[in-house]
Image (cartoon, rainbow, N blue to C red; front, side):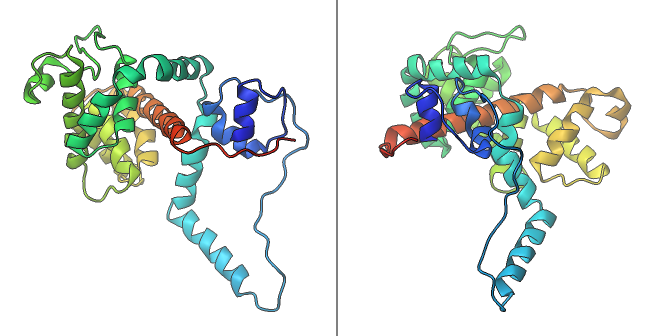
Length: 285
C-alpha cells in the first residue's frame, strides 16, 4: 500500500505492483490506474518442503475444503475484492476530499455518540456520509433531514427535538443503528450483524426479514448477508409479494446503500490507521 500511495500522490510515476493488491486497494487510491500487464495470469499456491511426511499437505487440503464448504472462503473473497467490482472514481475522490475538509467538524460528535451506543465512530461517520454527505442541513424529497437523515417519527421516538442539530441527529442515528443491531437474530454473527442492521436502517427491519425469508425459500442461508443481499431486489418484484409480509421495497437501492457504507467504512479505517501508525520508510524500486 505504501507503493500504491506514492503513485497515487505522483511521488513516483509508475511502479510494479501485484494485481491482487491493486484490486484490493484501488478504492483507497483513486488516482492509480493500471498502465499495462507485465505477465498473464499466474497461479497462486501454497508451497512447503517435499518430505515423506504428507501430514502438512493433508492439513492444507482439509483446511481449504472446510472453508469452501462453510462459506468462509467466499466471505473473504467478498470482503477483500468487492471494491474492485464497484469502484467509482468520482464518488471515491469526492469522499476522500470531504474526509479532509468536512469530517473534522463532526469527529467529536461521532465519537461521543459512539461511546454512548458502544459503536465504532468510524462506522457512524460512514453511515452519516452515505445519508447526508456530512451536511447537517441535508433534506431528501421524502422529508428526512439532518446528518443522519432521520424521519420525523423516528426522531421523536429517539428523543431528537431538532433534526438539524448535528449533535442530536448524530446521537439519534447512533441509537437507531444500535437498536437495529440488537433486533438482528442471534444466529447472525460478526460483521454480518452490522450489514443486516445497516439494511434495516435504510429499508426497515420488516423488509429485511422478508428478504431473509425469500433467501430461505430459495435454499440459501438467511443468516448470511452475501446471500440475503442477492434476494433483496426481489422485494421490488410483485410476483414475490404474496410470499412476504411487508410488500414492496427498494431492495436494489438497499444493497447499494450497504455496499457504499462498507466502502466508506473501510476507507475511514485505513485513513485513521495511517494517521495513528507512522509510515515505515522503505525503498521503492
